[in-house]
Image (cartoon, rainbow, N blue to C red; front, top):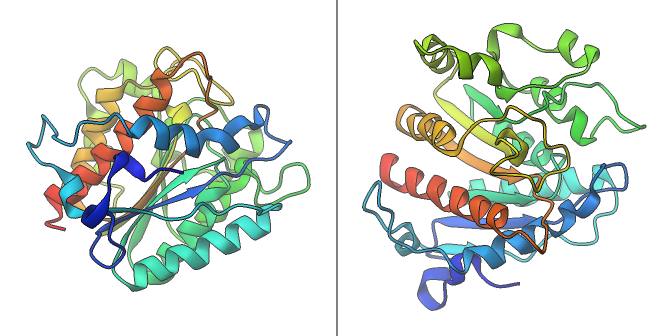
Amino acid sequence: MENFAGLKGAFTDYNEAKFFVLPVPYSTQNDWNSTANKGCEAIIEASQHLEYYDTETRAQVALKGIHTLEPLHNLHSDEKVCAAVEKKVSELLDTKKFPVLIGGNRTVCIGAIRAACAKFDDLTVVQFGAQNAMRVSYKGSDLAPECAMFQAKKLAPITQIGIRSMSAEGHRNADPTKIFFARDIFFDHKLNWYKELFDTFSANTYITIDLNVFDPSIMPSVSLPEPGGLQYFTILRMLKQMFRMTNVVGFDVTGLCPNPHHKAPDYLAARLIYQLMTYKAVYSKF
């Protein structure tokens, strides 16, 4: 696998790089579209075509150094994935590296959230996604993607953004004051939701993004392309403010099910990841 953004030499140095990309190409046959295990490779491939200069911030985050770790392969159960991710992310946080995870399905985020919560007090988990993932168990696993936010809720407060689908069980387990439904974001032209959103955050945040938070018109390559999703700049506006207001300690981007005949979603995911690294570098003086 190539390095993220096609970086070489000193800009990928393990000791000097600030950002560490960890690919976790994991999905299971329980996923409706199990090709999420190919998402990491597709994102890395698309990232080879990124421009390093960011027109919004006028920064080049690649100069901070981005090291791409070896993918976590051959993890054949939810339990093994969560344990392996937690161990690796803990190591990165202990050495003051910034972890950037690429999945795989949403199970990938559970281990990262466990590591972040063990390291940081006063932390909020901020989820972007179409489903609220608050089931207690799904098809025999309490670590399935459908249960990821229920697991996170055991460790930290959860803010959920872009939600437009949930089970009755997911509704019972959620905090309605911290769910920002896509339909409410769309119809609230006075932006009352915007202030309410940022009142839910604490000093530290961990961000988990399932790409199905985007509208299928721009992100069709996901397992469950729920209609009515958010647009790219709507999400970026929120993310930028999060990096300005809070100490973002890491993030993951999951859920890409690549289509070899349609590369635009792959590139969107790569561009999003690079933009979030840029916000971290610019607004955290990282």
